Length: 178
Image 1 (cartoon, one colour):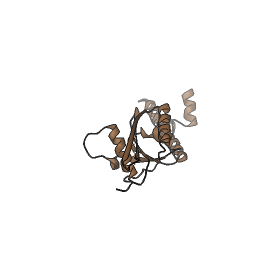
Image 2 (spheres, one colour):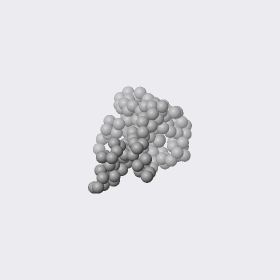
Image 3 (spheres, one colour):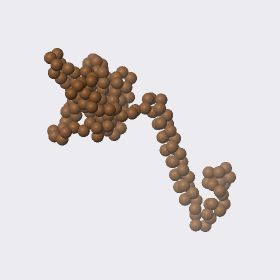
Image 4 (cartoon, helix red, strand yellow):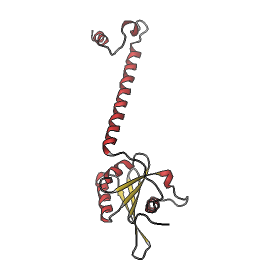
């Protein structure tokens, strides 16, 4: 099988650590692997970045599992070509499975171009998406609070809707203060 990338790293990302496997061709044409385990803290991700830079990595491939990939991706995207790969597309043949073999497999399939990266929007679009989603959740929380207030004010003796049109209107607010 034809190798497309010469110096590739595969990352198996977990909540507390990242297993990295660097793959390159050896002096006699064989494949050489170097493996290392890093923590998921900012300081340890900087060490991972330095480790990859020392090895002059062309491509970093990592699985997209949950949200654990985000800090690793964001730490490396400025200096390396980082591919976020769908875990279903990278499945290994069943058998003895370890984090080290997963990272090695990922580096191997990436080196041969057997996987495609998922789309990750650029930083400005990611920030806009995050703000938009936050605004949406805040609007939903506000609507839920208004509904709770209306429910409390629906006393058996005086239904609120008969007195005012909305509990959030200026006239309703004045009635609350009295």
